[in-house]
Amino acid sequence: HKEWKRVASVQDISADTGTLRVLVDGEAVCIYDVDGAICATQDKCPHGNASLAEGYLEDGKIECPLHQGVFDIRSGRPLCPPVTTPIQTYEVKVEDGAVLIRPQ
Ligand code: FES
Image (cartoon, rainbow, N blue to C red; front, side, top):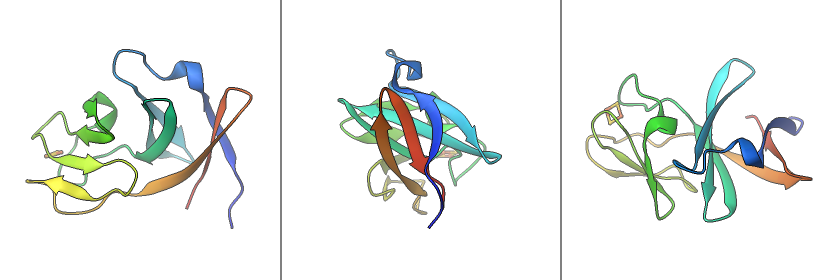
């Protein structure tokens, strides 16, 4: 198992978008505030060169800003074309206002 890594503060997550892009070991990761539950996935859309942190978050789903593909944030499952590949999800925990994830 890899170590938990502190990647952000909960308060760094944008109140407007509910997302935050961070780099973890050189990998772009998107942190989400899903109605108070903090989640994390890879930030790059597997369909193209888009940052999911710039997408539209609703109901635990993220819509890619480029071609509106949709992913389930908790499972990483693609929900709507043109995306067909799942995205990486990460285990997350919150400690004293800090967001920790376990890189794969
Ligand atoms: Fe995300 Fe095309 S780049 S749906």
